[in-house]
Structure formats: structure tokens, C-alpha cells
Length: 291
Image (tube, rainbow, N blue to C red):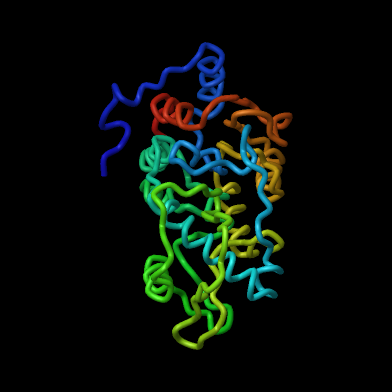
């Protein structure tokens, strides 16, 4: 796998003086420590996946778990939008920020990544220890028998059952891979090929709780690390604040990288108000390998 450090001249980011100074302070705080990383939607914007809450983000009303489970029409609308959005979603490639985090892990600096994203880009970038707090769009589950399906196989079934469906080259989508279709009339909703039960993407819907075992795994990653970097998250979701609080109680250095304010800025050792891609690249170049 090609990495950022294979191309050092390409990996040198241009930073304005204020950002460069903040990165230098972050390097001082993080050097020599094993770092846990928490990422949000802002890490994937440079891969073409828009942020939920970033400046200029469209107002969205995501479907709740209750709507999905209780209404056949809601499920039909969801699956049309989800299929169209997933095609564009799946075409997104890891950006240099994802690659930088994989590089930090391979050099023994990062202990792993906890992500609020469902796009799978950290895994594709080469990160080995990834805790996907909100699940992943790569899998679909049967709510009745528990059978797991690969999303690519399900997409082929959807198109076979709905040959009229078009997959445009450019789809307006959100971070969860969903779009709002103009119409879902006539769409054949996929069902479990084992028991004909209801299928649901392996993601945490609005109105659902993060599985206890998954959040415990995230807590353990922070607990066994010596610093925390939060990148591309406004920390509006409580799970992020809870992990930040775990680090703060242990008096660990906390570095927040995000364009605009976050709920955790007052608790950060260093706040870097800049894009995650360039800052993570800079940190990957500057931080020494953990001995």
C-alpha cells in the first residue's frame, strides 16, 4: 500500500501561520504518547461526503429507527434513497487525512481510530483497529433471523428487482449515504433471502442507542492510550463528549481539529481551527515514532 511517507514532498501541507503554530503546540502535547483518535464527518468531506453540521451544510431530517421499523412506506422511501446514495457513497476514496491516520497507526503512534462515520474509509485507508461507533454501510442485517449480507450483493438484488431504477453520476447525499428521492412508488423493498424478514443497514439510526459492547470497545481504546485527538467532529453527539470526558478525567492531552466551534473546545489542550486533511498530514510528518 502506498503511504504518505512514500512521497514526502507531496505530503508537506501548506499551513497558514496561525494553523502552523497550533500544529506545533499539538506536536509538543502529543509527542512520545500513544494516541487514540476520534473522527467525525469532517474527516470525510475531502472525499466528497458532506458534513452534517459544517458551515453551509443543508438542513436534513434523517429517518428515525421508529419510522423505519413501523412504516412500510417509510422503508420503501428509505431504500430508494439509500440505494441511490450508496452508489455515490461507495465510490468515495480515502483522502490524505485517512491515510495519515493509518500511517500513524503503522508507526506505533496511534493506537486506533474510533469513528462516528459509517463510510468505511478508515478501513479502506489501511487503519487496522477501527471502532465504528455508528455501524457501517458495508453490511445489511435481517432484523428477524440476524443473517448478514454484503451491501454490494444487496445492491445487485435491488437493481434486479427494480430495473427501472437509475443511478445518476452525481447524487446529493449525506454522511450516512442517504438521499431523499422524488418518488419511491413501485419500488420493491429487499427482504431477507433466508427468512423473508425485514432488512436494515448495519448502522445506528437516529433514535437508536450505540450498542453497549461497541461503546465499551471505544472506551477501552481511549483508556489504554496516552492522548486523544478529535478530528472533524463538532461533538454534538453525546458519545463523542463522553469519550472526551474519559480522557479529561485522566488528564490526557486532548487535541481538537475542526473547522468552527465544537462542544469540547473549552476542554481541549490545543484546538486547531482548520481542515482535518492538512492538519493530520502535518501531524503524521512531525510526530516521532513511539519507542
